[in-house]
Length: 280
Image (cartoon, rainbow, N blue to C red; front, side, top):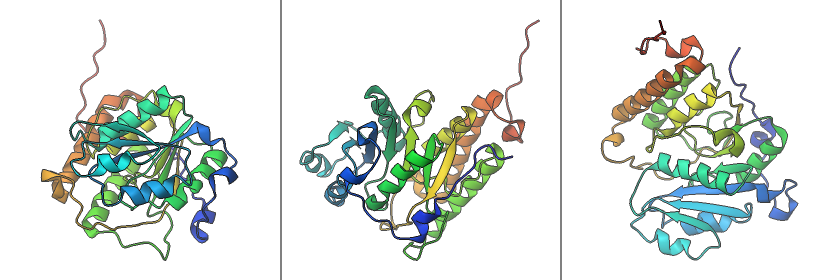
């Protein structure tokens, strides 16, 4: 039996998503935070913030040391901003989002990117899932249900994603279809106890292992696959897909070794783990 059942809300993929005005959403929106990590997003920040504020009452932006006009543009909007003096990484921004949501007593936090590759009109899909699914993590998937509006994924990115998703599924008994989509909803009470420390793009590898080790209930819902920046840089050496793949795998394996006593034996298959020491 799989550890976490992945549930598809087919209604979200079979019909176009209709934007619901804030006042028409049945859930108390004061319990949900929308959080967006950004780095040098001056070209898209205005468009994204103008659109998301139709669906979210409370918005937090983590400005991860932007050196373009992002900071000045953020000041035009009625949102909360945490600004890093230097770039600290996607994973560090995610850690701060969870801490902020917990400190400010939000029940849920929805995360999305700011590069126009996540569709704000799908925020209500996550709110619907929060209301109707028994879940601690609701993860968007660009591969769960094909849609005529979907863009083709760049081959190297898709290959890395599929390889890592398959290994996560095999080791952790998951049924994920997209391990790297940043469009997610997290139950704050469930994720606040995780010990997340990975600062870079390999953050999801640590997160998924800890989610399983802590018994979190995971669901997937379909989101539109949008690729506008085919030349996106992951920074320095990580633009090499093989090095990126190796980093992701190393982080996953390290976290599995760390959490091995709370995971099924199959998770550690083929990994060297420190021997258990028993007292005399």
